[in-house]
Amino acid sequence: MAVSSMRKTYILKEIEKLGSVSVADLAVTLDVSEMTIRRMLTELENDSLIKKVHGGAVSGQGRSYEPPYILRAIRSADLKIKIGSAAAQLVDDGDCIAIDVGTTTAEFAKKLQNKHNLTIMTPSLRIANILINNKDIRLILPGGIVRQGEESLVGDLIRQAFNDLFVDKLFLAVGCIDADKGFTEYNLEDVLVKRIMISSAKEVIVLADSTKFGHVAFAQIAFFNQIDKLVTDAEPPELIKKKLIENGVKIIIA
Image 1: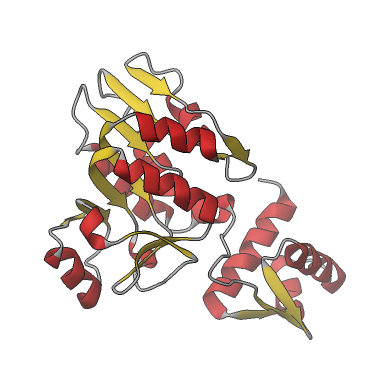
Image 2: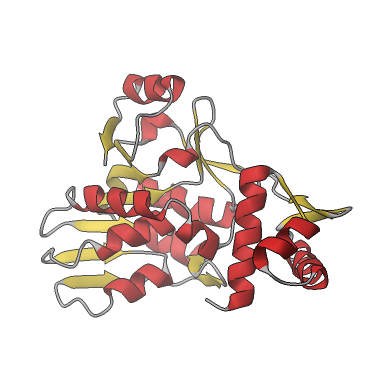
């Protein structure tokens, strides 16, 4: 990662953790001039990631704000690896599965290298690149429009593909999990694909780390009665756990 990108990632993580940052503090911590910090804050604001205020910046996140892939990938990375390993144990040789776009599902895909005779569909170009040279996997990459940065496929072509094909298991990524709103995501185009994927699967397995609990994003993917299993790293909050149990969702703690 370039030095500039690393600094921006640090700024975003600090804002997420503290709610706000100051130009002076960032300049000292990152060992750069205040002018450099202001320039980076301007670039982040232009990307709608933050809001500049006098002397610093605050979060620019609304419910439709989707953190950049690179930031999500390093956030709770150790938990995502554990979840990916636990989820891989749910895959049997010969399965036909779908793998959703996401950083946790990418870790899951890495754990499938020793499985045999799998058929895998995915709307993620990143996950396709992980699996592409595995001779034991028949990889199906549906058509669609590429979301740059996220490297996911969206649009009518991919929805039609999943509407016509059916899988044993779907490994689904979500943005947030709330007791009242269920499973939600930031980007509507991705949500439309996720909904079709759910309808094409015999079994739906959500992969989500515990930071997703108790939050609501822009658009609903599904409610609890549409999910079969949740693979996570910690016990869900009581209200969410109650909804999961009431709807027969098996909770697997990595």
